[in-house]
Image (cartoon, rainbow, N blue to C red; front, side):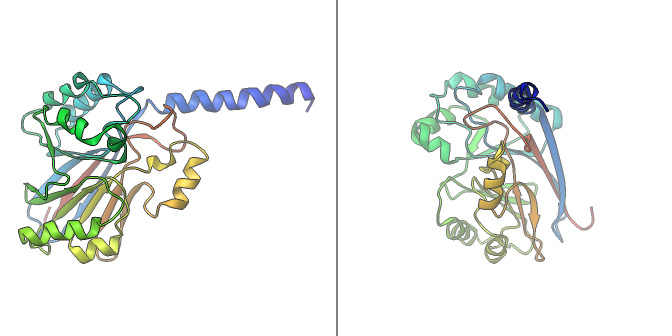
Length: 270
């Protein structure tokens, strides 16, 4: 190949990759999984958002898109597992107000991620509390029961998640053998084995972005045991990791998708 064409390729290939990554970051994909909790005599449809990253890039229109998706799909509950705020810009309260347009029958549960701390977690939560639909269950020690499933939540912290989750479960005396317990926690750092020990059936997380763009995909895969998607063990505990609805730093994605997760929990008889 001549030097001239080599120079053209050096320019064109990165340009194609950049354009593809910018477009790919705007395309919403749905991932739906069904998991069984033996003895559960009901069914529940959980819609999962994570890593929305409201800030310089994602603003009110992103929340409006979320609300449209929620209302069109009629889940039993919506969970947001952190990084709703990005930290790159102060969140305008008007950006999150559309969440109040989620259908009345659909509860919305929320825990914070590491990026809310960049913004100023307390300041952001003051705005969150003005949105009636959002139930912030991180750091509260609360349990929310929906259709026979117990939801517990932990706000972002790099340590003590296992112990804190166990404290909540023990406090309320949940019969974990007969009740599905779902833990909302931003970073997927609680192992399946630990979940089994404390009685959590399913942990829902985000944070990894599935690497978002190359070569971060590789580094994220190396650094995260639970990188993206659904994981389980022989004891039938589950971890579900979303690669996010927004992006960090740049609005680009390669080998990852803008994702809406849907987890259905059913019993053996369903």
